[in-house]
Length: 278
Image 1 (tube, rainbow, N blue to C red):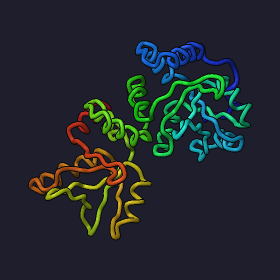
Image 2: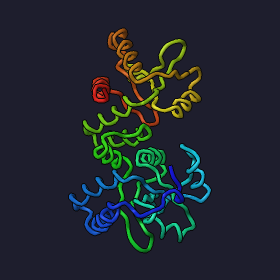
Image 3: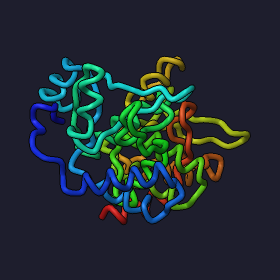
Image 4: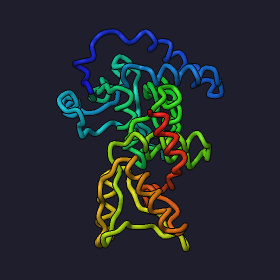
């Protein structure tokens, strides 16, 4: 991540075209060709620029994973995260509101933005309050467009990707989630009393697992005797297949991130994701 000081120079060549597309989409949001070109350019920018304080901008230049607070815009009842295609595009807003810029590579910015899930209703690109509108969308949709353009999603996008799969119910969206799962360095499996911890659904049981440590910690705090052990996604798949076979059908599989953002892992899709990753 880089603060404004480290991002000198002219905007990228595509930045002017991107702004022209934004202006066009503000006038005609249903222009599908313009929107396709917008997503292609936006997702392939060298950096996405967020607004923060001078202190947090300095922190971002010194820390690979800084804990920073970003500026949000209020649009009626909706909280929107402003994102700029270059520092130059953000300068009017920075000057007017005494803010600073942080430029992040798109994968890092996307993961950070998805961490704001539940706090924002969406994001808007290149807005200048009182002067010009920007083009915006919801975070789950951003994940789908980004994956279409870049072919992969960062691990931090998993919860928004699950939202997209749940909302769209499209097979490709569920596979997108399994691609993220397959690429995780660690996954957290619940154990209790020397055996697996389960989520019960009628007469069936689902192994209990989490994609991130924070959710795993919260689950442990809420259930006495629950512990989380680390595994790789491949190790989890092996354990699930063995548990399902030994249970003679009582264990159905594994549920991820229950109850905060639950999704059953499809072992067939996970195997496909492993194969895709090689």
